[in-house]
Each structure stands twice: as structure tokens, then as C-alpha cells.
Image (cartoon, rainbow, N blue to C red):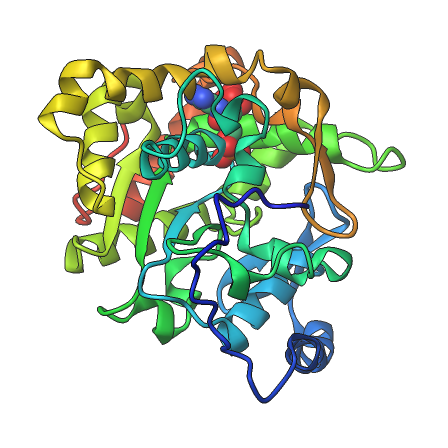
Length: 348
Ligand code: A3P
């Protein structure tokens, strides 16, 4: 994946791996990975054959577990880093576009904006891209200009202290009603299942989801980790809901600007800059762009995804077309119990 980054000019390139090369560090992580993997509990995979449980969360044995270990062992955050964190299918693609457009708004005009020709996942890459051997030279984190925009699905409590301590980087987390997450995830991952795997039924996906066995699940533990951290350090973590973003995009984008240290001036507001960003990043606009219809994303050696799969309906409450009354009741009950006392609620 060739990550689009604004400019390397005048950048003070950090030399964080001065004694050991990147390949040495990746090799070290590989050793720990090879020792750990055989001892981990296995659960049924949605896209791969298995998921493995590591430190309480379910991960794909290849890509997700390896990137987590590398982040835990070797990743060096910069205080200026901006992380977009999410449980998969919660609105990551949309928020990538919104943050990229907000942070870079003085750099680009809306008529020839990079988001019109480059997909959100290339403008705002996943941290995982660093570990793809072939692309490492094209995705060199040390050479990224600040602020680096990086996306992760890693649960908050598994992040290294260097990322969570008060002085370092900022996070924007997006969550979504688990019923919509489940449906979106089931439809998405069935499209990605290898051809020789039969499709996974909604009933089976539902059971696995309820048991917490889904990529980076349990869903509720993932959300609560960021929620609680956002209450403790609101200046470090902005906690957003997909549903709020749908309802009041202008309000949320202004909050984003304030939180990230790129507040919108009165002049920008009166010129309609916030509206332009919301329009540029809207489902209606992004989903019809050629780049988001034809290009592919290479997330790991084995995972190549058509950009169009990241844009399905973009609606709140599409679960109503898929889930039975019993499913809704059970999922709502689990959510109620898990979130009880946390102060976090999802509308039903
Ligand atoms: P649906 O499958 O419910 O349509 P992620 O980016 O985390 O993978 O989440 C994908 C979900 O976000 C999909 O939901 C997708 O359609 C929706 N989405 C993508 N871009 C969007 C946008 N610009 N506005 C609103 N929703 C968007």
C-alpha cells in the first residue's frame, strides 16, 4: 500500500531505530509470535479459518496478532501522532476521510482534493501497513511528516504505555450500535471469505459475536476500554458515535477540529468550510468516486479488499432488515448488561 502523505519537505526525520534496523525488530517480534501462537485458544474465524485469543481479545492469527506484538514491542509514538481507533465496521473509513480533510484543510482545495482520487485508507493508513515486507520502504513510519495519521483496531488496554501515557499522542475513537456493527461485519467478511470456505450464516455470525468471538472482540470490551479511558483523559481521547456523526455531522466535525488542535475559525465557518468537509466525506460523494469503486486495498499479504466493499449503505438501523426479534432482544440485553454503570448507551 503506497500511503498518501502530504509532504516530506522540511520534515525533521526521526531516527528512532538507530541501533537496530527495522528488519531486526520485525524479526524479534516474529520470534515472540512463533513461540506464542501455538499456545493460544482458538475460536472459529469469520474470514480466516481461526481467530486466536490473546490477552483477552480475538485476533486473526497472522496479521492482527503480529501487528499487535510489534506495536507492543517496538512502536515509538510521537507526541503529535493522531490515531483513529475503532472496532471494525464502526465507521472507520468515514472518519478517516473527515480527519484527513480537517487536518489538511489549508493545504488542499475542495475542487482537486486528494480524497477525490485517493481512497480514505490510502490517505489515512492502518499502522499495520508498516509490517508488510514488500511495502515497508514505501510505508516508512519514520519518514512520515507530523502529525502522522494512523489507524488502529487494537483495544486500548493492549496498547503500550508509550501510547497511553498522558504526554503522548491523541486518539479519536468511533463506535456504533453493535446490531449495525454485526450486520455490516457479517456482510463484509462474507465477501472476503476465501472461495473454498462456505459463507458463514447470520445465525452463526450472531452466536460468535455474542460470545465475543469476532475480530478484535469482544465488542463490548473494546468499546468500554476506550470509553473509560476517554472519561479519565478527555484531552487525549475523543469518543464519538457513528449515530451522532450521522445526525449532526457539522457539530461533530467542529468538535474534531477543536480536539485535534485545528479549530475552525469564524471566518472558515462563515465561508462554509465545515459544510464542504462534510459534503466531501459524505457517503453519497465518496461511494460514487471512481477510486472507491475500482481500486483495491492491500491490508496484509493475504488480505486484499476492493475499496467498494467499505461503502455499503451507510445507514443507522439497517439491522432491522436482517435481525430477528429474538436476536435483537438478546443482543440488546447483552449490551445493557455489559455497559451497565458505565454511562455509555446505544440507542436502539
Ligand atoms: P454499512 O455496512 O452499515 O453500510 P468501517 O469503515 O469501519 O469498515 O465501517 C464500514 C461502515 O461504514 C459501512 O456500514 C459503510 O457503508 C459505512 N460508511 C463508509 N463510508 C461512510 C460515509 N462516508 N458515511 C457514512 N457511512 C459510511
